[in-house]
Length: 122
Length: 107
Image (cartoon, rainbow over all chains, first blue to last red; front, side, top):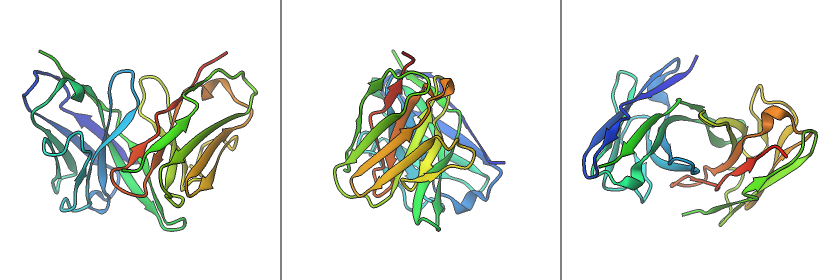
């Protein structure tokens, strides 16, 4: 059974750094791209970043480019390093698995973690 | 970036109603679109993938259609557990982009 569990969310001051982790289980970790999606309080969903299956081909939303860095290790853990945090980064951060369905030749997000809350506050 | 315009932003239907939610992409995205349901305090869940394919376990009253730039999510015979927020999401190109969401509230 696929499980994704985020951790590391906390209250942090503006300008500081924070690293989130997502522990994955129940699937072949190195075969899937993993994403970070966030949701500010009372707002909609925002795609943040993708870490490719091997961690070498990553992309970021303009809102976090240059400040956030995604990575993964060989032990089923995805990371999001968040630097120079601003109030606008306050959100629940979800770890999400992307799957590609060859029968319809399209991608989708099939599994989501429960999320971890990051609050940027002075 | 591909903009996803979702409408309406909110609806107040009654149990048993038929509801249609629309997403329009700023450029053609083939069938690279999914629909997600989110209930308060929970992570989103996949309903539809590749525009019209129903996720296993999702009731057949949910259906998706469209291709290119126009997509719809239809919920027939609305049930109490369907009152939630719905999002479309394009997978055609990075950055992946969500629609603004449609909140179904009980009338």
